[in-house]
Length: 250
Ligand code: PEP
Image (cartoon, rainbow, N blue to C red; front, side):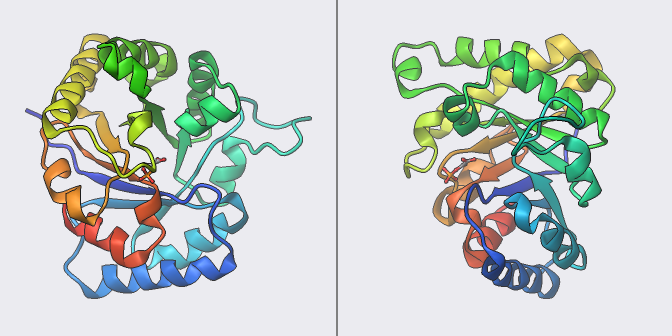
């Protein structure tokens, strides 16, 4: 069996002004004075403070990521940001296909796939998000929905380059509700099976993160589940103390 080093990523979403960098400083302090973290730590702040996160996080080993990127490298796309620009600012990761982007901006699997490909092309590691709605879970379709998202959203380039999958049941995001440990375990096993079927020997080494209401109180139990190789954390990543507790739960 392959051992995968865990990764904990914080998704700040549309939260974070320059003042939020105090939380980053606090987190950096905890990470440098406490026991060395067993997980890679990534923060995905708003693009406006990305370069500050890159520079202030560096001494504590905190890596930075974007929250989205365009499929193109440059051009007439007002308001968008390219993977190359994120890399230029010092990012090493980028979230693509977050359910909020899929919902608010109508992003399809094909677009998410193109974004992941653009990220790889710019030297970034894409964190590709998948996850079912509540009604899809209730009707027993969760695994099929996720399988289709995986098939459509992961570029072929993943056979040669690092990608990360984040399983985020939509009904668990920001709601305080989480799937049972058994449900997380069986979904992550199903995802592993798909990755191995498609990417052969590479499949077992691809990180599969869990996301959706991860918090200090449930992190230890969820992060210990087989095939859960870390977490993607929204709300609880905004406070250094909470995020540090989650990191330390690995
Ligand atoms: C997310 O949106 O990526 C997420 C996991 O959010 P939360 O932790 O707030 O549920």
